Length: 147
Image (tube, rainbow, N blue to C red; front, side, top):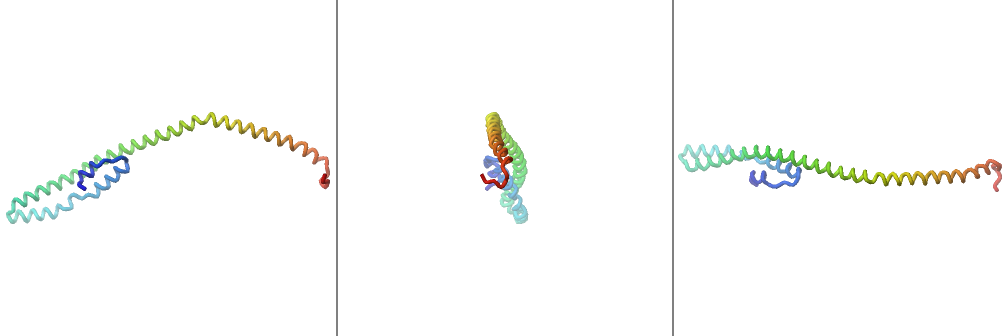
């Protein structure tokens, strides 16, 4: 894929932009430059001016791609920062909605809690009422009496 296509490829998330950055970093537009310089030198020495001019155009295209890569990485880095900020804000908004929904449940939950406490207190009072006559009886009857 051409470098410009990598840079222009649409991205929907910070992860997509990170992938684009890695793909752009992996590109090495200058890799062919040494071979082209040697080829241009040979063409000049042999008087093949048209070939030398064609190679000069290719070398300029390589220089443009090197510069394009640098500018593209700068652009993508800014886009990544903006995307990460937007995703962070969206996550904060989502968490705030969850927190607000939880807050709205609090009064009903407190009512249920108070009802539960009242039921427990009532059950404890009933258990105490049951235990009192049993304890009184057990206190009056010897332990070995099985009545």
